[in-house]
Length: 411
Image 1 (tube, rainbow, N blue to C red):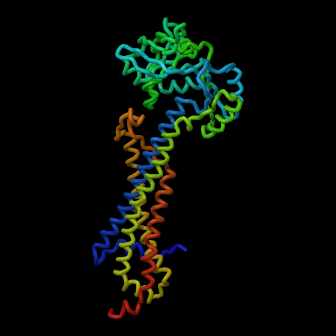
Image 2 (tube, helix red, strand yellow; image 1 turned 180 degrees about the vertical axis):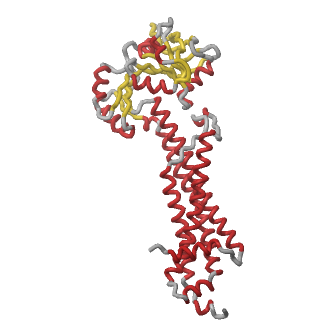
Image 3 (cartoon, rainbow, N blue to C red; image 1 turned 90 degrees about the vertical axis):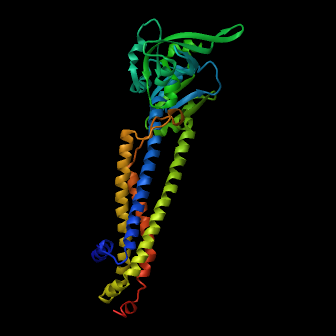
């Protein structure tokens, strides 16, 4: 059934001039209310998705998907080459990288700043490849050049704050570098800046430096040692399972971890923010539903005579009910289309031109990313239509209670 009669009458009722202009005003407000709710929800979800996706891309590009770490700080993994080969045999593990990292002090021309120095083996092609994506100056090939000093890659904010430009010499100070009869003492090592990277993630750009594994081993006083074995996993969703399997292979002295566990707080906050956003902005849809309810009730009161005439001419009560239900759905559909156009349009412009800037030290990102998903349009517009439909049930039921004889008594 195509309900051609009901659709024709419903469309005429919505577009025809009325005796009471307030009904037209309320109908327009209802459409704008639905549009505002849909638009606000699309934009809010685009922001949530943008933050989550941007952080995930940055974290997955610059950090490991899964890793084996020492449970207690020591001299590093024993026989780590054999362990790395075992980890490589785990299904879905695409690459394995032994690494050594530790807290150091970077001393530059302007000021010193604490940070993390991470050493990668030359064979860790996947790890170096991810870092190469973010290089703003310099190149990875220069790490192997003989320039008198070992090469180092620095985050853009770390380099800027300490005044370390490309090709400048930076002093890396390890607090526990040399062991003496009186205890450990700081060791000083000079590096040449051969590259500056910018990932867009504040913590990485502000504190991290990368160098060859053997050079970092010399800085931290752990020749031949590594304190973590990192793995890239495909698909990334299997990282928790891979971490658990790697922990079984590694034994009791090591612990398995994955990127979701390491960033649990921020990911949980983004998930909760999404839920709160949907609940809060859905209240706008409820307000729009009340407007639809009021508009249709007033329309039923105004159309008593028309309803009586239609019934007298043979219209069934179920057709009368569908006329007013279709009116509410038309209002919801018009508002949904308008809201989707505005929501996706504003999200695209705001992301393309970076309308909203942020303090990177607080939010880890320098601007608000907007990434609306096509799938959101389906359930957001579907929810708006459902709310609009529910708002029509009572007015449609009231329309079937009109008594033709009473309505036409004085006509």
